[in-house]
Length: 238
Image (cartoon, rainbow, N blue to C red; front, side, top):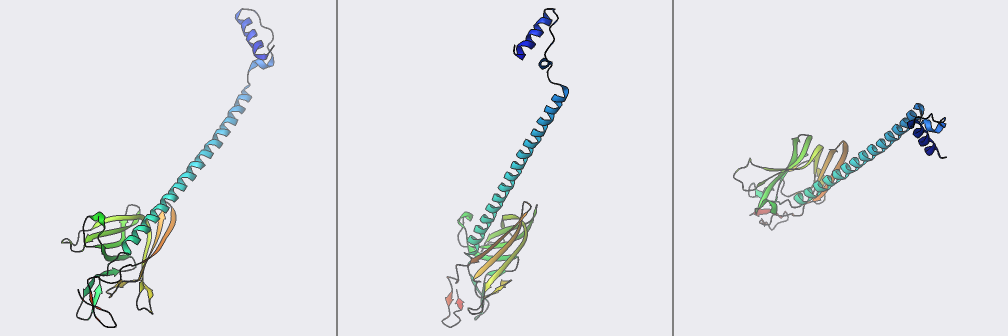
């Protein structure tokens, strides 16, 4: 007779008041040692499964953070190129023979003019300022904007390009045609630099990342200038 039927028959005999026959060993159930051993194996398997799930979740979060950080860097790169490539060389006369363009750049700050973006809902030129500003998680790279002919020179619209900036370095390439060099500043010059290099060191979620982009300035001359007919080709009036 199968073990299950034998155990049931013995149980029925007890209910009927009759002394059951001696039960086989198989009817006595699991011993305490066997139960403890089964629980130990089950606990070990649970720990291993939990560890695997935790490792997978951590790897997924890390991969997502890296992708998000890469997307942020690509967005900043695109914004910088769009702004700086349209820098406008508005010429301001100092005297009858000299003048400078509106462009003031140092190693960690840059101010320039560019056509007003459509998103601002205005025409003409806008003054932009690129610099670092304190943020909740460290320094942040911001761009400030105000109309060129504003009546409130202290009012700037500020947008954050990216947070967690460790270092910002800006360089400028220009000078004479046969002697152009990279410089750490560019101010009070009769023309714009040919290239601007922006180097950012970022701390993105505990990982260090760099953004280095070199941007060619597309507009080389003030469209409203009347140029002198000499070798220097100076803007003599507007």
